[in-house]
Length: 305
Image (cartoon, rainbow, N blue to C red; front, side, top):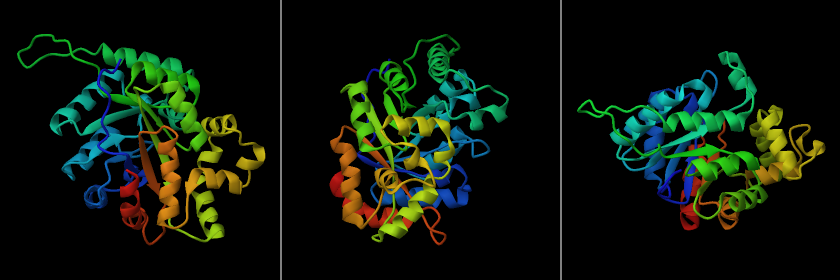
């Protein structure tokens, strides 16, 4: 059980998928600029063959001074629970509590090639948390000492994992969800756990162009069973997820338009019960990190947060 409510520093952060693969020479100045723009937290993912989660977090923490840095998510199949607990504690200690561990079960195609067998994700996560909380600790004087659980949030979409997040973590990190999911998640989590919602965004007033870019961003997820099950549970049908996604689906998952319209779409998640919205900026070839999106949105979402 997590005792104190997690403080993410503000209501609007950034979910930067590119930081999973960007070299440090690219990620460091980008993270520093995101901090200067006033965003509260940077979330970064971990996948199969990407940069390792804890060392990548150290790179981002070292490039910044105040902003929170959170893994969104660290794959539990990529290390054992004791290593995860110890890694998180080192980063929290070294960077004045700015690091927050986000944990997730990932997906079969990200797990099975590692030599594991993806199965029973909720049971697997519960066992992982049990082992994390029982991790051995030796104090500087060589004696054993009790210590509180690692601060953490869980990647959670469906009700069983959301209930586990309420029970065993500081809250939940949702991904690729509609405002309706945010309402449901808040009901399950209750008032005392944080709810972090990732939402994709781009600055583009032309509906055709915006939806075309949105479909490109959704393509990997619409070929991933866990996300398809989640979307179907929200009322999207086979036609919605076919051919890159219907207009209805794209509009629910990708905020587009001018800065004001995008800010309104992000605010809808906050109104529905989210504590924090992590903007995933959709970049262009000329701006692969999407920093232009974040620069344009900073004044508008400053009013939201």
